[in-house]
Length: 328
Image 1 (tube, rainbow, N blue to C red):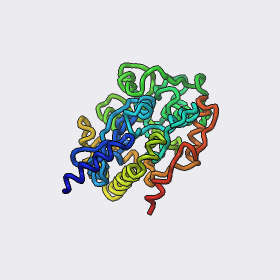
Image 2: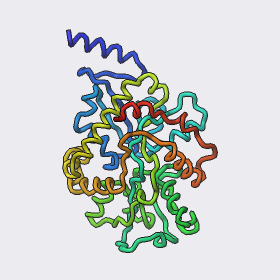
Image 3: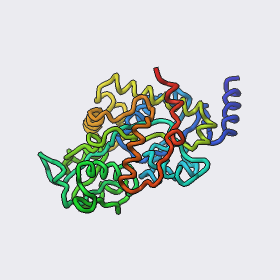
């Protein structure tokens, strides 16, 4: 009887938009992440601790290697959900697309990148960047725009006091820097700490400490998917809330041991160091709720970079109803 009921439920789920069901009765979620980083530790905790499974979900995780690729996956239907910078939502919304992507949960609230140099710079400050070239990400992407915003706010003029190199794809920046391109590079953890330990470079600054709160990476899906799969969205966020609770109640070493399978070529010590770095800057948005103030700052960042002509309506591009339901 239970097996028959499971098969019936699976059949019904296959009739719903974007839904799939495994033989074990779990609903499959295709999730495309912009990159693979300890910055997204709560997501990996939810996977490794089976919190998604407890909520009836199975998450298939793929790496987009850049926000443009992750958004393409969501728009094409090859991914149900994307984890990426919400600037992509604003770009698509401003194109007038009828079924546009919407933010339904915010994972990080700070820039998670670290500035690295080939040389050890004990007393690093903004003046070290004068006349230098920096690999900071794709033009129009949050990493590059936030970095530019931080330097501009320190009275550093783009293309006059410093140069941003946009020629290298996001997932190729580390390799390009190690091959000698540019003077500095922005890198996420655990790569930043791991390569520093290997003597490849030196971490000289945390971009997140300077940028202030910004909706850096969010969970995004098409409006139609959210409308037709509300229970799934709620269950997805419930699993992430459990992950945040686990991180809060355990030390960094325990969390590192939990997610080490996600980083098979990285040591537990390096992951632990990465977690400490992100906790130090309060990187994670524990309630998963996006705020209007932070989105206003994001659009300021985009305008400063010359990438935004029309500001998007916060209430159109963000749906906080599921995250708000989980408060308390």
